[in-house]
View 1 (cartoon, helix red, strand yellow):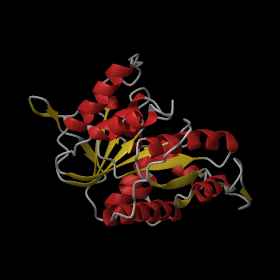
View 2 (cartoon, rainbow, N blue to C red):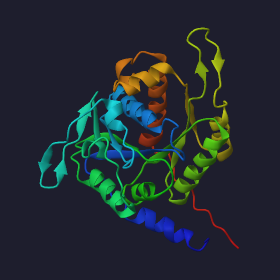
View 3 (cartoon, one colour):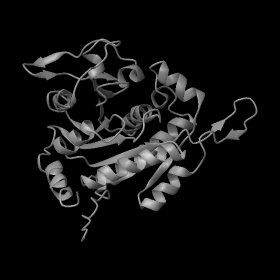
Length: 283
């Protein structure tokens, strides 16, 4: 196993080539589903746009695409060439998802090679135009989609989203370990659903615990990007296709997302997100 790891790492980075017009690509990932990764990805992309950057988002979750719903987008992308599609756009962000190309209730019963092909096409056969940053909303886990991104794209870094509870952090650690193995810089960890503030009495309750993601980031030596609360407004605006950063830009939650986006952009644009040094194991 230890002898095979350097080969996997070299293979993961050797095929990566840039996407024409796209300056930086970042991945937003989680080890477990249901932690709010897609909502976070959506609002981070909108946070970059709020900073005046040209931003796009690729929904790489083939089995459970969420970005069409989150952005309130329907319809199919326009074909602009023999093998090129024009991304949809709303709130100043360009969006591409398999959800635009298949029926909403259709089950994607695809094996790994088909998933890899679809993600590669959405990366390479989409007319993204000039973008400062492309956010890739990865599916949960550490499988084909994640490895495809590492192989096919020069990722500037990865952001891990987790809730504070131990069972979510166990899987978040696996996501962190995977990106370290394929030599992708870790931009930081976001603690989502960190606490719930009762709208009636203003009592704050840490439903999933509190501080677990911060402690994990400190233990791993990676940046802790911030806490996003479990809040009714975030849920409602997401379900309505009116993400909170776009529709309530002056609200406290929107400011949290924009602050995190600004910290990520600073790390990416200045080159502060460095790749980890290879680990040498002698047995």
